[in-house]
Image 1 (tube, rainbow, N blue to C red):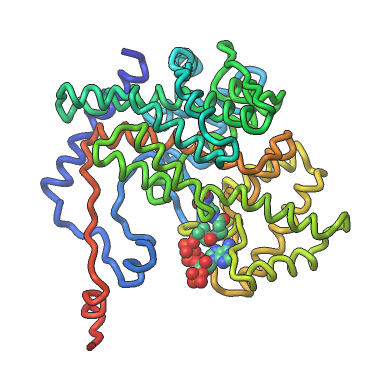
Image 2 (tube, helix red, strand yellow):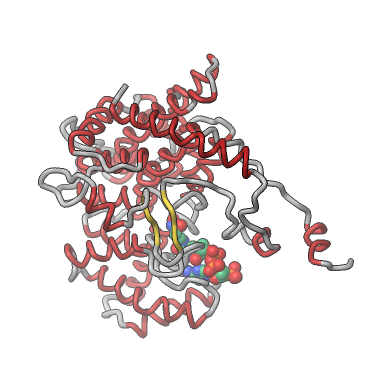
Length: 435
Ligand code: HAX
């Protein structure tokens, strides 16, 4: 058994009694109450999910295993000669809550290398799809196509104890995660680069190999590492993470669950917003016809969007009530690497004006930018101008946190998810409305 798997086994076994005790001795203690507004408006803030892998504070932003974004990046072992940490080390941290040593990190790098090869039939599935399919539809299809590889499904059929579920889930999680960079890059090169896929380089780590297979030179490897880590997890209630947890709660394996989560990530109110931000910005610049953008023109364009009943992509959040630290981390990257890039300047101007406009409109509870407002600029700068691909990048990252959660879900024996619905008449009765 690998060092990581051994450590994980020990951690899961040590943790289990906490859940058993909570359920047995305190199962009827109230955690929350639910209002009619929450029932109708998408269960905002209802505390009914549990995860120890990340936590989202509305004012502070995300913490991965208790660490803020800067603390996470500072703590993890860096790829030699690069600014960013190994994604593989981050995977260790998300699974165990401990920062790995360089030696432990390299063990995961080696383990992932052995799991990296994508079966040919996955590429055949991708090639059979019409080339104008959205990259997210392709990504989701490729993941679910691999379901036949699931060790969890095979072991479940053979019969295994509930306390053993986490083990084949861990194997599925590693096998799936290690293959995602190759699948993403294949979709990109097949669809956008005249069908010229590039083979994986066994010498490279997760992020480095992705950049290599995309056909983009340094420092895109660091961009990829940063991007995947930043997008990995946002506690459990967001659409992609929640979908993955929900689907897997039926004991569907990781391939079914992650594919389903990617379909949720592909929505414009969620991960597709990074594509929408670039589309909005490019349309806006095209209308300017070469004219220098000013704050006044941006203000007018934002109001035009709001007045036509659309949302301003990249702004607002269901939980956050301040600028997303994932936005700030990417902004800092831009300030360091591309401060004078015209598209970055426009995005910076939108950052200045949009919160004022949204606050004046008075609808959005959070007028500040989220992760998606900044990420496309970096991709565009390094040559990934095909913005329909951006959500696939998000998806590769999101798999890290959600797969770590699935391993723990099975380790702690979390139950089938099954909230209760009511009828509108029941809500009216609860409100005291007489018909
Ligand atoms: N532009 C215009 N209106 C907005 C808005 C925005 N950026 N953000 C919120 N609003 C509106 C809502 O549509 C809602 O209007 P109605 O009452 O007419 O329905 C009202 O303000 C209240 O919404 P809220 O409570 O502040 O926000 P929600 O929790 O309902 O929604 C969203 C959160 C992120 C979906 C929302 O802010 C939004 O649509 N933003 C733009 C799309 C976007 O950037 N999505 C990515 C979010 C981050 C993420 O998940 N990435 O994957």
